[in-house]
Image (cartoon, rainbow over all chains, first blue to last red):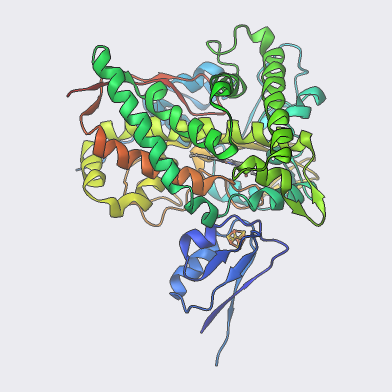
Length: 64
Length: 430
Ligand code: HEM
Ligand code: SF4
């Protein structure tokens, strides 16, 4: 399955990922990015990883 | 419908040796001409060198490189350690220190300071918080459009799309956000015009006075904000000013000076940009009636349509970076201290990234445009708000002013930095 990781030191709380995939990403009230437990469309998640302006997101492919 | 043939620089009789991007009058030309020149530069001289425009009383710097390829622009933008914003991101000249006091905000800052301030203000700009503002953007747009209808009815049936629609929407949204009192709003509009005029002669009385006019505008706006900050500390409200005076990261808060600078940045970054996206969006729709009809009939097109308007209009033509050490780009070496202008307007029409780049296509998807900036920590803080404002404004126009018809040529701003319209005459047929 596709898993995504966020580097919170790099994240600038741009919300670009949330804009593209609100089912997977959410900035909380403090502007800190939270990964939601939903199982989103891998293509959309890959697009968010590509579009993240700060390079804070990485895909970690895990074989189960 | 077939896309119009795209002229190249040579079709306009332009040779690369005649091009001077530092000449203000170049930027008041129609977009076809400007894009033909940017295409020529991208194809033949992707790091073209230009001497700096001369501004009275400011020392003339070493000149700059015009970055026109998408890939080079991204490579620069995503390495803030090698390409700094701190020497000034919004002017070709390095900022004189006295201007830095008012204009030295986020956008011209490097880490670690940038990261700290950005984290504080980002708290107030999350998609969720902005979602809560949708209603107010809608109310502002409806009010502005109703007012435009009255202006036309009471006059000769015409309006100015810039003054009557595109300018008031973002200004009122930001003033509402910040909680600016009604009686101060005319001053706020006027002074933010001065700041973003890029020295356009109509907006600044005399070029000799550009620096003085900038300073005065900064002082007036900072004065207002300082007053508001004091008031909100005493009596907190729901607005962004209250959030800013209270926002804290690692125990540190913004100083009054930082709040004032940030306010000025929001005004200039959030007003003219969105205004010019809206006014030139209206113009583009009038030039592409098939696209207009398609969008008006289908709210499902909002998402891609807004992105295409930002790509097409590229309201900010460039931002600047300065190399912090010797750097290599696409096999070329540049010394430390080289100024690079990142031409978003050119990258947004790069055929290596966009199929049929000179076609206005509201359904374009994917659309990885760099109108809000490319990768890196300075990516537009207001992108969600701007998208919302553009989508809501056009939907409101389709509903309430379906008879709006552009009747005259636009009057373009003479600025290399802001791609803007000063006026766009239109008629309301009903
Ligand atoms: C269509 C409208 C807009 C466009 C085209 C636009 C474009 C841009 C661009 C190109 C940058 C610079 C990125 C860089 O240097 O790498 C930027 C930064 C910024 N924008 Fe926008 N913008 C728009 C609307 C807004 C709005 C509505 C606001 C706020 C209310 C805003 C606030 C900012 C701020 C604060 C920054 C500086 C961020 C930083 O340096 O960390 N912008 N914008
Ligand atoms: S897109 Fe990147 S920088 Fe923006 S909120 Fe998501 S992880 Fe953070």
